[in-house]
Image 1 (cartoon, one colour):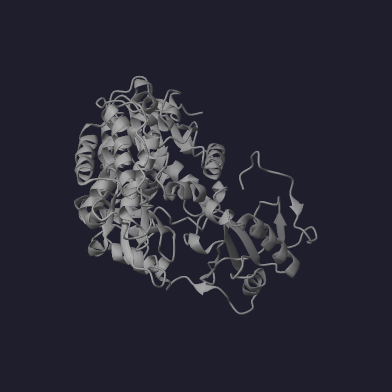
Image 2 (cartoon, rainbow, N blue to C red):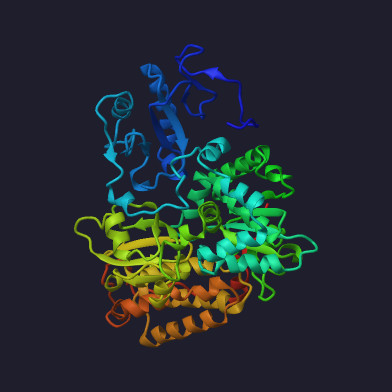
Amino acid sequence: MTPGEDDAPVVPAAGRAPGSAGRVRRHTDPLVPEGPVRVSANVCQAAGCMSMGSDRLFADLKEDVVASGATDVAVRRVGCLGLCSAGPLVEVPEQGRLFEKVGAAGGTSLAELLGSLTGEAPGGREVADDPFFARQVKVVLERSGKVDPEDVEDYVASGGYEALAKAVTMMSPDEVTDEVVRSGLRGRGGAGYPTGLKWRTVAKAPGEGGKYVVCNADEGDPGAFMDRSVLESCPQQVLEGMAIAAYAVGASRGYVYARAEYPLAVKRLQSAIRQAEASGHLGRDILGTRFELHIEVRIGAGAFVCGEETALLASIQGGRGTPRPRPPYPASAGLWGCPTLINNVETFANVPSVISRGSGYLAGTGTERSKGTKVFALTGAVVRTGLIEVPMGLRLRDIVFDIGGGLAPGRRFKAVQTGGPSGGCIPEDLLDMSVDYETLSQAGSIMGSGGMIVMDDTSCMVDVARYFMDFCREESCGKCLPCRVGTQQMYRLLDRMCHGTATMAQLEELEGLAGMVRATSLCGLGQGAPNPVFSTLRYFRDEYLAHVQDHRCPAGVCPMDGTPGAPVPPEGALMAGTGAASTGGAR
């Protein structure tokens, strides 16, 4: 472990004499034998498993291993192991076994896990043939669950920073950009803009006042936890991608914009920056070259609109996080008027593989226009929820029923929502569609940053549209009238439908209003807010008609009580709405 502020004097592990097989510095440090390691217990220490007690499990398992007298067993802290619904998780990679719900009621007992580690009959289940893992292809997540997210030396030992070394010592900035262009990598933040083309634009922009590279980690979609998990599991990989990008475009300063609701990700990211600076992978004279990059973390207040790039930049500068018209684009006039490259967490995490393995590695996976893999947060009504990474072009059916394990017994699939509040709801008829940028767009949805929420027959699609519209109206910054007022009006109409008091004229009004908001809003929040309305009307219009004409909810979810529903706030209240009040500058 790299020396730093977290170091404490080395003390013998509990119950172990000085000089014996294992040493533990602190309660939170791994247990590493001084001799050869026969087996390792990789304990998931991402937020999902930690919320179920894996931090306590980590400490207890170390004590039990020490007490057993085993001198060849390591207990390691790792990032997300993926199968979040079965946490706390422990993997024994040498045995290819995964232990689920360790220490939890109805799960694996510590005694069973310890027995497997000390040579008794192996427990847990095989990982290699499990459908949840077998259908995945890991590029962004290749080190997640394998390296200690708080130890730069562990990352380096796994091949980390080899791509950065190759870039800054063996390639010119133009050669790095060309490699990214050939890979076909597209931005994973939602829009799918070609990454290499964006880099080339920033590289060519005059930058007398300097250039910046910014990582957008302001993940705010309901049900999404992809970027958070990547930062919690392997922050060094994101920093390496940022450093390679900075070298390619000529930037010397960088920022990671993360939300305050992600304390563990922020803590590990800040620690990773300090360790990377101490090891010579960030700061001045990186890896003995003249290249330098200084990265800071900016913590946002949690406004969803700050995921929009111009609002994000305004917040980094200490201003109110609201969007501005484009052009000029950040690539030519971003932070403090300087050329600024903005990519999201997953995009940067792809870059080291592109450089170390060559562009063909990524280009050889996926479809003709959607190359590589995509990380999804698979949630909702499926049996197995968690963090997954699949090749572009995999069928939606394969994700829901093979990886996700299908739905609970007795429940029927109704829809899957992709792309967050700006996405759409895809019906059962389209389960065999390819998951890529173009196909999702044709179906009335978007890739988004990677949220994927599965719904069964207990979900009401009118209520789903109302839920996402409620989110968008709350998160609207209030700067432009179409979004500020239009989302409120659409929510009012949807709410009336859920209460059984809407008319056919109001259903037509909803459709017309949705088109106006999409066409005239200033930024992506307003432009995408009507998408759940459009997609549910397109595929589930019968449910809308049941609410409006028959005054009933087929799923039995909506109150249908004949009350007027939500009133429309006055314009003055709309201008000072909840979302607008939460868009302060970052700290």
